[in-house]
Image (cartoon, rainbow, N blue to C red; front, side, top):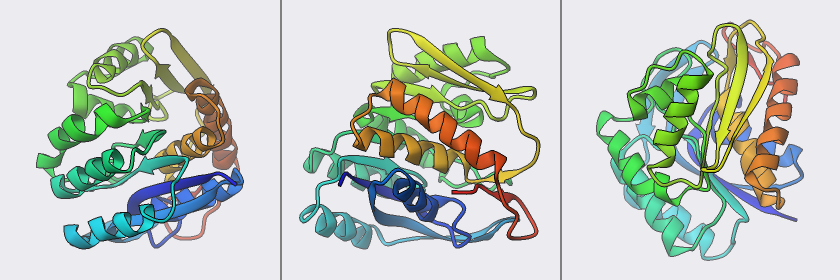
Amino acid sequence: MKIALTIAGSDPTGGAGLQVDLKVFKSFDVYGLSVPSVLTAQNTDGVYDIYELPPLFFSQQIKNLLSDISPDAVKTGMLYSPEIIKITAQKVKEYSLGNLVVDPVTVSSTGVSLIKNDALDTMKDYLFPLAKVITPNIYEATIFTGINIDGTEDMKVAAMKLKDLGPEAVIITGGHLEEVAIDLLWDGKEFLALETERIGGEYHGTGCVFSSSITACLALGYDVRESFVKAKDFVSGAIKTAISIGKGMKILNI
């Protein structure tokens, strides 16, 4: 059986973070490992508090896990601080981890910052160059490039600028566009745009589900383009069958 590791924040609702990553891995018949980077106090209405794990303990989690088990793919989600990002990058290099998917989580769906301001450059400098693929949404791509994205052409410019930061490939997810949901892949050679009808409503954890789907597919041996197509289909299906378990955003049906 193939193995995937998620290094991400904990979400008590199970709709995002490492909890949903593990659900996605299981859906693809991939065995899931997890290392929490931060704990959150949140529900379907929003994020109310964040507790960063002590860096030394965070490092110890990864060290003890990877000294025993070697994953076929790895994804990072909410890392929050420069210290945690640097440790993650160091462990990726130390244990020669391939198929790294970086979901550069910066803000929650309700507008709460999920990364310290001084950590943005750290992520670009330390983690992006190690990534097989990075998966920012439009808002995150704007933060990292300074490009105001209003459509596909802007996405292309931003993707090329992000590719220059070192990842092998860039996927910008466009679920926040007004009329259609367009996701765009740039691998340095050609673009691949996948478009689906935009489904109304507020959904929790779509970015986590997308990036963990790609991670699972890479673990299974698919290339980035194949993983992109499969992840897009998986997320679309999960959104269409999303469920309401609380008073706020819907949870994707995984």
